[in-house]
Length: 375
Ligand SMILES: C=C(O[C@@H]1C=C(C(=O)O)C=C[C@H]1O)C(=O)O
Image (cartoon, rainbow, N blue to C red; front, side):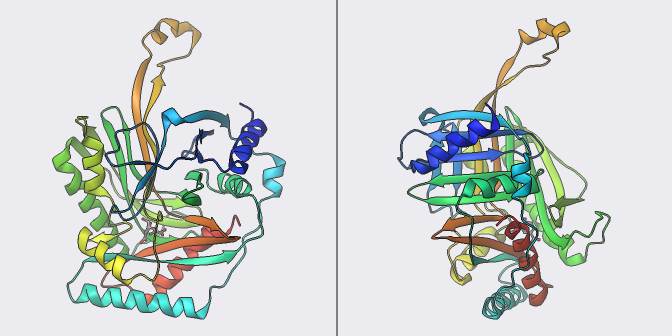
């Protein structure tokens, strides 16, 4: 379907206040939409259905599902029109209030104290910042996210009973294709200044290693094999992170996805370690409700046909085209909720015993710049 017709359809769906998700996976040009035909709130508990899941940080709250059988699915190719380019505003510096700063610094200082008292090893502390916005149409904001973050998972998700969320996340929670899985440990942050050849401090190396160790030890009892890559620097827009790729094979029995998600979500990249203690610490001490920020979202058990070769000379190969089942879940970061003419931006960072509260504040300011750029 053409780019313009595709977005006209999504726009009409939004005007009719019906649920949908429009998204683009990292490094591809296909944009896909699931348009739910009714306005019911479907949920999932065991992640066995097919569709698109939108899950909160706190697994005691509901995971919303756009079930495949209740949706129309459309695709288009990403086209960078002059209209989109002209609509891309330049980076603007919005200074958060002194009160916000003090509040976050106190939150981080308490976290550092809890770690030094051996209550926890790492905790990810976050905040929410409200900005008044002039852009009336979230789909225009979505197009600007597409343009600015080609390597991210970019989405706009809407449900009339839940709200409207947008984001461009660099972090995969887990991707599964038949019996192969891929995930990543992503943590540690510094600003990108034109090169990925940078030095990382012990504090960042430690907080990222906690994430890698947690993911590997949580998955090991549930998978058949697991491989861990070397740790590298990865760019996400104007930021750099430390990243380790983790992959392997899985035994796909009925409830494997539920078990895997229970084991790894929320990872220490967005929660902390030990997991349950860090989660309780966050729920008790953060000054707001995370909702879907640092939850996960994405394609759930979708069928994809796999053609080995579409080359004419290999026509006979196509006879063996197979159907595979794919799940592609991402951590909901660098995201915002649009509500009452405001954008609520969600941002956090990992705290260890060596964290300096002022630096952690600055890290959240840098992270909000990433997303503010498109407003
Ligand atoms: C929590 C966030 O990001 C996570 C925390 C990071 C960190 O502590 O350095 C880096 C990448 C993400 O795993 C966020 O962007 O809000």
